[in-house]
Length: 136
Length: 363
Image (cartoon, rainbow over all chains, first blue to last red; front, side):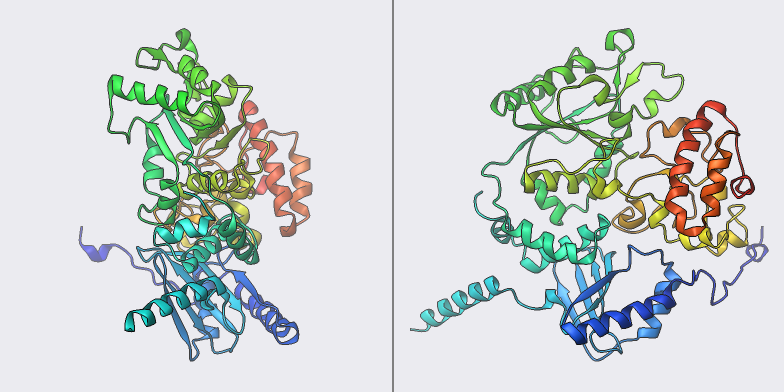
């Protein structure tokens, strides 16, 4: 059988969209208002919502990518990218094989995971003191 | 092995951020709100770790080793794997180096040393026919082995649909008289992790819960941990919006199938199946049946093999039709109610063997 006998159908741009993505923009706006008012951080678990891959693409395209991208190398690469709307972060956690394990939209001035934990800073200081004691 | 969990992890080269990331993913998997991930990380990080690695004994009965295949693919070098390093897996026929008398010795030594404290994992059903002669290990029937080992166990994990519900060996006409663990053992806490096979991270997640909190997680009426089996495949399916809009694939190669519409009419058992596939996915998060274009088989439900055809839309007999119609009329919001109604229908259909189409459902 010649290969061109197999019909190739190109999916239309809107194919696969459920219509659930646009409403998320309103929810994100509400979350940003709460951040401005009370400093409350919040997040949307993108895997918990009935969103098709096309919905996610649509949302990603609308929000865009802003000035800051944080890469976290912890048991696989994670990326925390600030969107075109400051304070709105697109967070993608991957496993060591590069597969996405969880995906969130986080609304925060800085995502919690980026900040160093106090206990870890204490350990860092101990290490610094060790380095200094080695100098003499 | 003492001190908070986070310090032990640190010694193994696991940073706090890795742990926070793991908890965020675990929370997502358990259908918890994102804020729960942070709370969980804090609680787990400061929880005192067990002073000794808890002993785990894994008994295989009438099974296909698919459950073992599944757990070994729990992305091996990651955190799940490390949490696994925290237990002492004292007997597992497929994974252990010992064989024959040596293996049996290891089993009895572990039972004796940890009496009343070990965690027993069972995969496979237990055949009762011919006094249990259908499946024997080391000259003993599975029934005798289970009773003997269960006696000193702190709790039992029935791994996979066979151990949890009887599974495929129990499918009609059940030639070996296969039953589940809970049919045999009545005096121990039993937790069912069904699935054919269960999702690897669900297995390790339940073990992690037991190790961290020293107790078993909250269970549903089928003794399944609510964290992972709390919602139906349908409720968390990314194709759910198409169901709500009435957009269905009618065959596996039509326009609807290409557009990724709902597979309900092609026999998807998602509405009556409680499992975490829609969020955790399979093969390290690569894909899952519905994403690959095939409906859910309902493998984590009791008697899924006899539930009336994988490619038939969820069936129902004539009588409960009115109940279903009422639920459907309440509209998309009543999705959960429909699921429950369908659940009843499936059971009734098994007896009556009447099939229905979507048109019947919406009458």
